[in-house]
Image: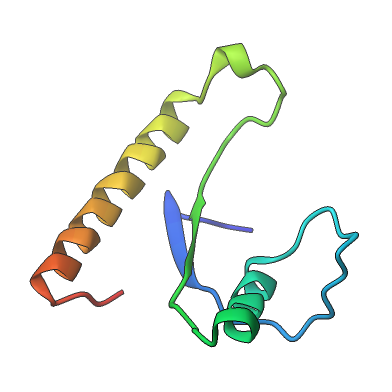
Length: 91
């Protein structure tokens, strides 16, 4: 998957069969459950941030470029949140 520094995609609900023995469920299934249980369908988004190294050496932390991508992503989200407060949000 080719990402720029980050992308944001809207989550759509899923009609997948939910089994309560599942270890993990998709965000779409979570939205579907929300609709079934609470009769609400909130907007939801996935944030995909580009990473570069995948070794399980947590003490190293993120690479410099991944840190930059995270910072850029957070700045974008903060800007969008400010737009929400002003009432002019568009993704």
